[in-house]
Amino acid sequence: MKKILILILGAMLIAACTNTDDMIEKEWHKDVKRVGMVVKVKPDKLEQYKQLHSDSNEGVRDLLCKYNMRNFSIFLVQLADSNWYEFGYYEYWGDDLEADMKALDSEPRNQEWLELCDPMQEGILQGQTGWKNMDRIYYNY
Image (cartoon, rainbow, N blue to C red; front, side, top):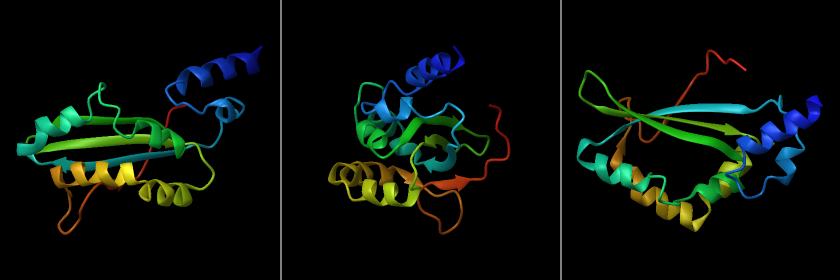
């Protein structure tokens, strides 16, 4: 009964991805790599950036799934310094993050997507460009 419940929950959590057969067979407690990132959004590009990432825009969602990125979420907040910041989170369910990210980077549609999005962002540290990976210090399973 427990295994059936685990399979049902796993299927529900990853149903947005098209190729889930192999994921459903994996145990729910698999050691998933959880990634948090942060970046600034240029204020004059905020509305355009939000439109690009709206639920109605397919974007590169299928490519994220293809390369084992699940539960990809982006949160937006304006802080006291008046800057807009994004927090991005995803779970990597594959076995070779470096190879999958390299393959994703080589996808022409992903390259086009980044050509649109990257100029709308700026790093949070001096000299840094793009997303800054964060250290995970807590996880409640």
